[in-house]
Length: 382
Image 1: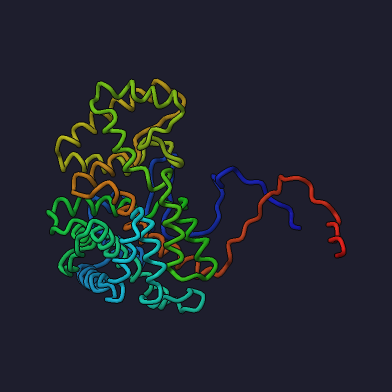
Image 2: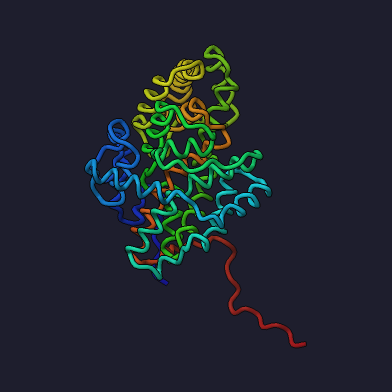
């Protein structure tokens, strides 16, 4: 056997693959998509522009953006064969992401998906666009069916973020609500080799179809230590109630050994740049929830600084993500699924990269169990 290489727990600091999509500079508090600062993209352009950057490697001209936007809008129309599946999956019940996994597995055939190993690069790209475009529609339809409401008709006039908000709420969104959600989606399309992206790339390395890739990634995203944090951060705001109670609440949670959701990050040692922008977006939306969140954040940061002076735990993306999503009308059950709407775009382009490499991801494990018996005893004759 080849000599095994010991790596840190969680593969921290291990480069497992190469990517041209983007990366995170945790010590600097900076991350980028290709050559562009991701937070500046969220400030200055729309989701379709950033999606085009992932797809083509450059930001679009106005004409290219218009054509790409129309192409994505057309792809949001799911095949009619999926209508019965939506009703059946919703009737079974379960968490929205679990429903989406079931839906995508069942939808692979109606969507015409095939193992990426058997497809040309152009065919893979077509299927990547289709999956990322249809996921928001499926989530909206599943959410509404689960509460006994019919799906909304896809409105091709809406941009991707607005179309998703419409699909969930059934109401054409206010432009400033759609823009706030769009900025959150742009900020979360990709973020290095996080758990869900890496899981998706492992599935892609087997030559699986893109539904399998996205389902694998969703399984990782569903965990509360990954995509499940925004709703828990908002639950914490509810538990704290007022800024005056925040310090004691934090001390109680830390004493009990529980994580403070919405604070600290596995990669960032400097402040999370996504949090700073989302705070601005939330303040722009205004309202009682935002005012309370800003005040409570200040108190939590002070308490954490006192309790853990040697370990900075600044606010991360999840703290204001939940505030924004609730402010624009999304129910908490849809917070992590909304994360999946943007991250699916990142997942499928990582899958295309991995498929182009053509190498199976197959690490080894260091065995630490009891010593094997050699030779294995032959079975007793009957």
